Length: 528
Image (cartoon, rainbow, N blue to C red; front, side):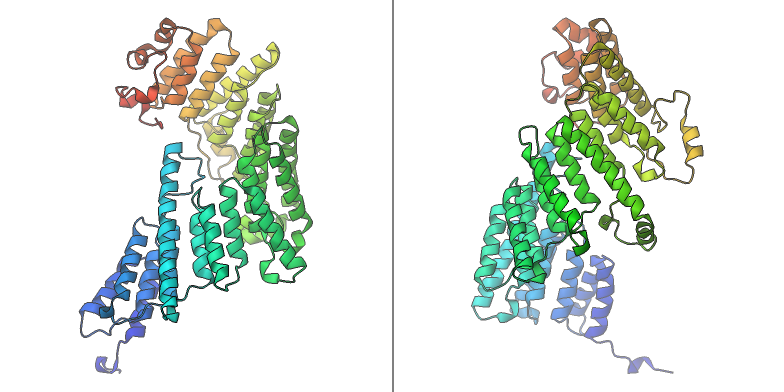
């Protein structure tokens, strides 16, 4: 037998255990081991690798504040009393930690404008901290400490940090200039990060220029490392999608042109994926034209055909845990983009067309193409914006009422089937995940708009009153809902008649956001 006295636990032993904790995202345990090594004279002293593992454990964490902890630990390493030397890996790890420290994606449409601004502010501040560390590396390297000389990864990560804030593109460009002035060659990831920054800031033209430069370097210069991939092309398309509008019809055209280039070069690793198509569909929807609405529908069918064509390969990837982002697999996300295109289009029969697509989603053989609350709200949006002759308007309201009732009941059954129930649906799809339907404040606001725009004046008041009562009952009264009902009323007396008790807290022309006395139970589940 081996005696305990013959076993020596050295620094490598500790580093190995710490690395295991770090890979699990358990930074408290990794830090605990580091402190034990520092405090217990019977344990080996930590070395640079030990500290770097602790830094890595913090950088991998999704918890807020871990980037600050990582920087504090880095500064601890830089003290002479630490007994260790910082290196490029130490700095790069903390720079990465700051690049991940943010409130969320600044383009996340699930948040209010104020919340997105707050998150963007966090991203910008984090990027500045990453940039400060990069400058410290440069100063130390210039002073003779070549062990902390910044490399391509250092600059690229800082550029990626600035790319995550909406106004960070100018600073990202400055960092690229810093990088090249020091004799470093930007990588494909570096250029892609800069293109992302430009696209997010609303400058897709400049992002496209960089993409063309990469293509030229690859095709004419033979620099294989700069060969653009799906991500590079897609981030430029996303830029065009963000600026697309009825006033910028060229944006959707440019997005389609880039998509065609990608499709023609799929065999070179530049082909589109589902995220690419989502960006193109978004660009088409925002243009609000009939032609682009029809093109969006065509692209959705194209995705289905492509998925069916390569179905066996895709299924094998899924079975083996492959990256589904590399596939062209339409889901309810892409279907919702087309529903949005219908709702924004200038077609009089938009509600009817949107309802047909919703019916197709219900019948789709893949569960991830079944409609969700966003799908239903998109059809309601189409109904609320419907126009045309009396027949079309009546049909649009009828569809809107069916959709509204379906959402209120949380019923994923086909809304045209009045006899279907949730139990019927569960029986039919018992082997598939259920996509629950839940009303949102947007649901009530859109249906109120349907009542306001599509019903004759004699029927508007009772319908709006009932809608507002239902909305109050589920705590979803917010600015959107109140504004729709206020707009429908022609006078203070009309408002008092329709709003009922709510009129005691909010006036006919009052800003709901400033009415702080509204009972919380009426708006507790809504974004105010």
